[in-house]
Image 1 (tube, one colour):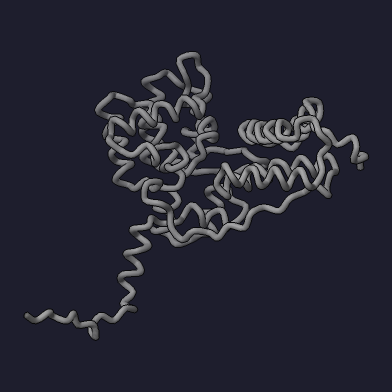
Image 2 (cartoon, one colour):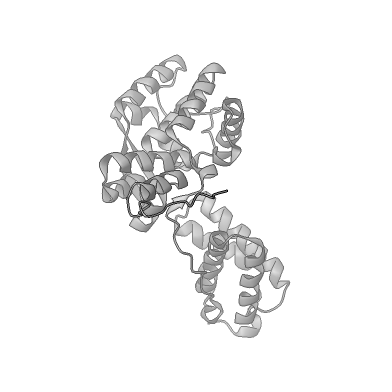
Length: 294
């Protein structure tokens, strides 16, 4: 363990930590987010030695600005770093968060919303974007996993997805395969990634998010619900409503914990309220509104 007086976080230590994350085969997005969070902590530390008092003050500062979940995400990055450098006495506890039973209405994408997006894409002639959305939604993929949809995967009937140190096989629905084969034929794609830019590079998150937001405006949908990961949520909700098999859904989506899968299968506030209203546990028969008499 390093002596406490030398516990100063700097660019060299961050660079060493980045190498560790690469060796652990963390995704590029995870590494980028971890380093951004640690750079924010480095600015907070301002060259002073790191101790428990400092990390607690940092936690309090985060709580004043971010939501509890965002605070925990940033603390996870910090704790991961502290463990790696051996500063265990500086670790901080995550905030305790009670799991919500429903998702806010302005965040939920319904099948109707999804249909409106596809209809808007058709009106605008956005064939590639429409197929991207259908691929993400019908397979429950993360947007970072879209690059695993290759011509070889389409012909084979399943994609081999390797991410976060795990590998899983994800089936392509028959109708999706037919659409992609037709698209590949028209675009002269016989190998490699199906969805690429004009330069032949795989579409990235920024490409898709930008196009999807514009499509959402065309469809007249709230911007708060138009982002690629919401398609993964929609897949999980539809699959679970049909199959009622959380364990298999977790395998399809690549979750290590069912707690994660539970987040994806949450219904909307309206669905939760409808279920409560139909339970028949409130008795109105004894309530009589008194009529005012003149």
